[in-house]
Length: 324
Image (tube, rainbow, N blue to C red; front, side, top):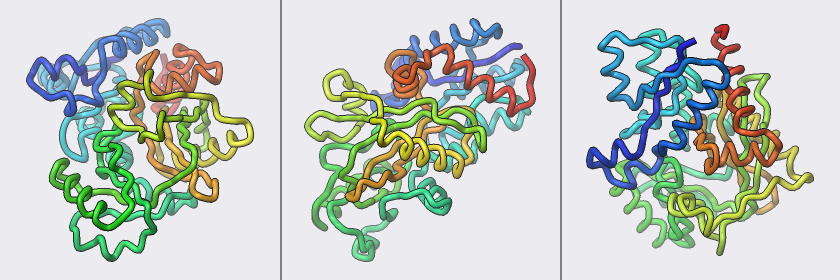
């Protein structure tokens, strides 16, 4: 079986004049090499397709694949993670990981929380603000946590994201709307411990592959800067046994509510009463064999990278009714 790999290589974009922040979610060569090596060990024939621009060119030239392993994050807009799967759908080329609707829903943290909350999964009270007039009608209790509604990898999150009064809220919301050209998500601050749980499969077959607690030095938020320098700022540890079942249950139920498939992560944080609340889901989780959260937490649970990749591929092949 010929498996194409779609991805956004950070160096490609930097060479083409894009900024470090624009490319913060993009992958290093070692990530692509790790994925390709794992797929080849499973007996697949691989073909590096590249990003949306390279995919478009290859499709126009008549190239096709039996299956595409898609980790392309996209570049602009709140549908950027949906572009590659939507294009593949039009060519009827099957792919690993969620489709365009789920990718778009999960990227928009406000829509994701509405969907998850409707299924009974706890979330922190919050609203979306696209106009400063909406601030006085929020009814939320300070402190609040504010971030762009459709960014990933901690983009737009800083030490100023936690606000304590109306003046700070107005200032930060104004900045985020102007800087990121999108609404701000405003939620009551969750003071509890933070966790991330890896998921493989979909629907009733979705299971937690492991989880870990994320402990940031000096109570820093898990921002893009902190993530890129995690060796200096972050401690990862397995979830304490007494919290594991609750974390796994909340994460799996959120994943099922979003109808995500094959594999990814769900982030959680405790509220003031210790209850685990959904923060966000990542159906396009990083897969760097060494540095990405999903492989790290899987490894903590005794699941090495090759086994993780095999689980993801087996679920995808079964879902798509493909035989290898």
